[in-house]
Image (cartoon, rainbow, N blue to C red):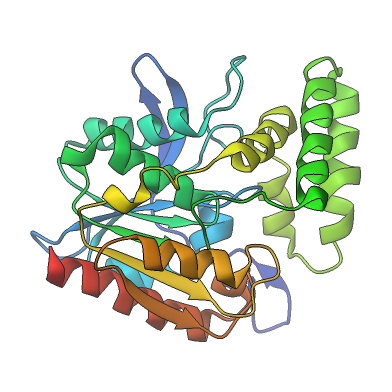
Length: 287
């Protein structure tokens, strides 16, 4: 995940320009921007649950920026995303993403949603269809819960989220260490651990509940913009059959397959990144 220097030490990957951005009436988030070629379309990167823009997309920034203007933001409660006392809603994340475009003066975008970012991209189209040129949906689905085991798991997240609202700062820090970082610290590089430690875990846990409730099956067939669905063929988080269902339901969607697990954007970038470039190119050509 990180780059090794000549002495074998871990260093953070090279990251493009990023800064805090105030979104009027919404709050302050963190946004990275890459200019891309003149007059190039804009791709808007929407990261997955428990990640941040950098953790999700750092392998993709430079390859995408060779062809497109690239914008990436941290979602609510994730990384340096908006902090709010309100409950987490995917709809708010969709509106946040368009608010970033408003600040940057961008009219139309191609949302590229990964996992949780997939529902956010879908909601961007549903809520603001005139602003969406096309979509790229990666390792995601039109719904996430069907089995009893899945529902019980997300009910557990709901309870933890409610508890986190009442937890003092010290306990929240403990939650961060025990729930997440302890399981990751032996395989994650220090920069990634630091990035994940920025999360507001009350909001992240509420995001898990929101994902569990998401269901676009009643309206996803109405999508009328060019769409690419990137299917992670060894995915152990979002079943392949649900990713295929998403592809089959969207009129004239094109499928792009990657031989990798749910985290292949990071674990297999040599496979994922070229496929992502083809998926985005397909949307641009068809739009």
